Image (cartoon, rainbow, N blue to C red):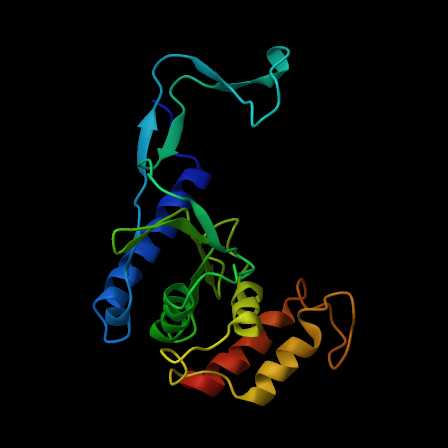
Length: 221
């Protein structure tokens, strides 16, 4: 039987971490103010017979080129179907729906503090229903890029720091000082323009050293 692919393992690793920290957040004093956040855990399935299905996405099917093939014994990551209005709340570059409310941004800030600056859960989507957020397919941003292709490393965490907006529930959580946030914003968001620093922010390996200096200033070494 086919082995798990690295992509499949990444799906599980991201979801398991997000589910774990969301459960802790839900039981915290801050999390008690919101609907519970539940990250759906995927499960694995392997096809024993050849299968194919139509990919239509509002495009009429005209020939066999529009058929996607799933190989025999191929492992797939599957999640339970969520009934309700499915929404994209936050992307893995922290692009946020302005109607998102306060629970998810607070959770992200809390998660960054809980991990002492090591990680933040992003790419959050799902449904809000019956007092719960049922969420799927998250992406974890980590210092050492431990969570696969959607983990942007220190860059992904810095995106969060640059774009997060406090509310009354997270305003008193640890956070870099305003001078540091201003430095991040001064050149990080406008990636095509160089300002204080002479290196390309997103790709240069010195980005990790820069982020570590911020982390250490907030949490200590």
